[in-house]
Amino acid sequence: MLDRIRSCGQWWVRALRSSGHERDTVLFIGKCALAATLAWWVAHDLMKAMSPAFAPFSAALTMNTTIHASVWQALRYAGAVTVGVAVQAAIGFTVGPDLVAFVLVALIALIIAQWPALGEQRSQVPTAAFFAFSTYAAATSTADKASQLGQIILLVLVGCGIGLIVHLCIAPPLRYRSAEHGLHALAAEIEALLDDVADGLGSGDVDADRAEHWRTTSGRLQDAVENARSGLSTAENSLPFNPRRLLPAHRGYQSFERYRDTLDALERAVYQLGSLTRSLGTWREKESTYTYAPVLERYADFARRLRDIAHVVAEIDSDTLAEQADEMCKLADTAQKARERIAESAKQHDLPLADSTRPYGVLVVEATRLMEEFQHTCDVLMVTADE
Image 1 (cartoon, one colour):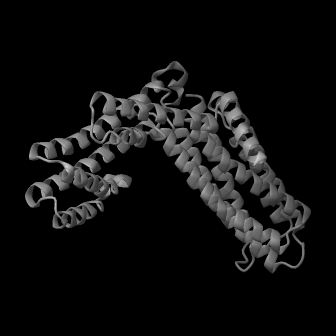
Image 2 (spheres, one colour):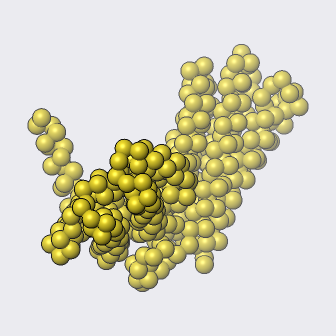
């Protein structure tokens, strides 16, 4: 219990002292609470609504990671509720508030809930229809029934509107750093794999377990690619409708093409790394001697050079991009020379490159392809840094 209390206290300290996920979470919770409170006050105290809870629920539901996502969430939610209430109104005023009417409402609402256009808010169609049926059944007159159904839609619109206004006016989230963070994580994993490959080849320590570890790690890199793409998408979606993008401090983050091109190159590099680790595993399984150890040592040196480039990408920062891009290009030149030494060593030691039953030809080809993708990454960042 004490450990949990201490951990919770440390979490709040981090949230107060520095920006990051903890502070974003605290801010998000605070904004949700404020929006819900304002919506309740409007619905309960000003509108004297019979079901005021619809407003704060809608306000909190509207909150999302970005303003763009919140707008779409609000539109879909309001649309789903409107459709659900409309279904109840159509059935209720023609059939009446009996069990047969409820069955019809349930069937129609659940069928409409399969409509993909409403996205994740599809389930709100039957929910709204059931609440509307309850309200309709409790009303005493036709005018009162119509008024109560209309009030549900109005409360939802009020809640969504208040939620969007609070989200827009109080530190609207700009997630442009999400694009960098995704690249950081992906490049760090690539760096770790290249470092281990270099260590194994350089020391001759490539047992079956290590070769299998390389293959497994390269397979997991695809998850890091998907996470990076998700972060990039979040960054792009944080700009539309966001007034903070007009501030001088944020005007340099209007385009994410550099990150997209870099991610594309790293994704291709991940594919090549997968092929490389499979080839190294094949070498470990088929070769019983280290006759070509000097070539593999050259390969280890090449892997270290690529690792150094990945290390810079893992720390990429838009504020220092020009210096980092220049450093990467210098490292790429060094890596190119290391790749050339692989080919020279292969020729010197008569490596059987043409033997399709042995992995050496593939290893040399993969070195060339890997170098192309890392060079492209450097070129992309250098060009965009000069813009």
